[in-house]
Image 1 (spheres, rainbow, N blue to C red):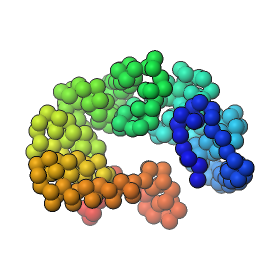
Image 2 (cartoon, rainbow, N blue to C red):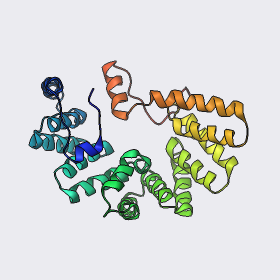
Image 3 (tube, one colour):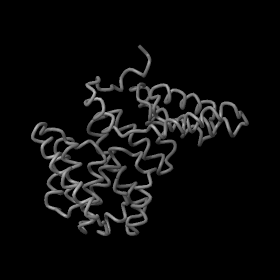
Length: 276
């Protein structure tokens, strides 16, 4: 159990004791064996990259981070990891490129503690500059593919830029074209709430929660709404549900690893939970 701290990583002040070093060396051997058995699992390379980083084998770390991205370039955390590695090695331009790629893949990162710390560390890259670069990237992808996925991502980024009307157009198009995705409904609800359309916002949050019963964010927004209008019973119920879901929240990687380990069917995002 090694305490994680972004600033320690990027400032090269991460120190391990003898026992931690030994544990990491053993973990490297196990991951290396896993890769020999399953050479196309990008998560192994990603995790191995951090293990090599922690024992100061930076060339090996870099190779493994890049290998993970070459196998699966659409996972945001892999780009963040490579960005942190680059930032640690004073490759500021490469780090910025990887962070922008991650934000374009998953604009929810704009709301994370990681992003807040990134802005504090990089005073030369203001929030508006990063947002503009990500918007340009997503607009280019949308023009090329016309995919509702990119509409959803760009819509969310517009919310962070306070381009509310442009965000609404894209999110409504997304929910019409791909109504099974929960986060566009959540973001549309957040937008509607900002505009004062509470009734429509609540409906959007409920749809988002129905489509993904493990996502605590729409439930949390419902709790805040009920608390605001004085409905203490529904507020408490939703706050309790939020707390339970938050503490059960797992990354996509950990869910996939668990499913594979127990030979479960991989979860799909087409059919809502409990519909069949």
